[in-house]
Amino acid sequence: MSDQSSLDSKYFIDTNVYNCPFCNRRNVLYSMASSFVFNWSNEKYCYVYIAKCSSCEKRSMHLSFQTLLKQNVHGAQVLNEALVFDDLFFYSVPTSFFTVDARVPRILRELISEAEGCLKMNYLTGASACTRKAIYELLVLQKAEGDNYNERISILQAKFPNVDAELFELLKHIKDMTSEKVHEQSWDRWDSAHLKLFLETLKSILYEIYVIPSERSNRTAAIRQLIPQVKAGPTTATE
Image 1: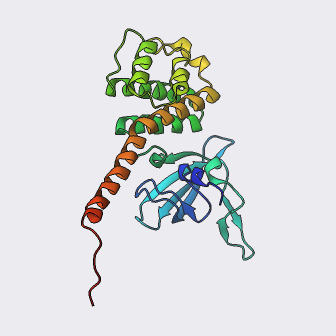
Image 2: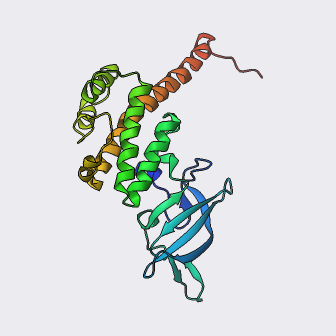
Image 3: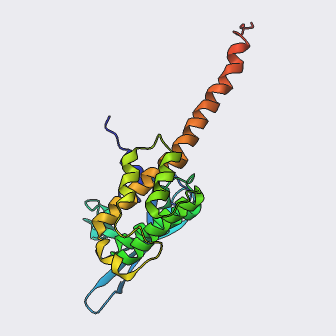
């Protein structure tokens, strides 16, 4: 069977199933509880959809510049199963927190989620600022102190030798990150392609730092729980 783990990073999987950002259940049924349209500008419409989780019954809001509905053979409005909803929604509330594991510190999850939301709306300045802030917050949390940005990244890399060194090298080569302050001239170099690369790199590093060690620890704990059963020896069946 093909690997379908990429579906876990999506909001909507199809017209029936999504990953709920409230109860964090994957592949759970949802329904479009309501929808409406408003004028984004004189010439442009924006479509608002409210999705309701069938498990926790909480509702999320999603915006698109394209209608997701079509008429069926009976003339009723239904969701168009031919569309890929994740590609059409440019903004969602809440943002998809499930794309960053809950074991990652909340401040980092919030900044990454905000950066991804800004990026979807092509607000590159906001996305750049949030990405930059997330990196510096990670350095603070990990007490990676140094005289400049590259030195601090090197210290972080030394703390986690099992993480692919190429990921840290990518962070070192982020344009205009060597300054401790945000300045206007830097934003013209932060295009969407660079931002996607930086965000995915940062998310990979966070996964290696915060998630993998936890999973390894949980597996070890589960094995240790089996040891007493082995030491106790085989049990004899009673009639």
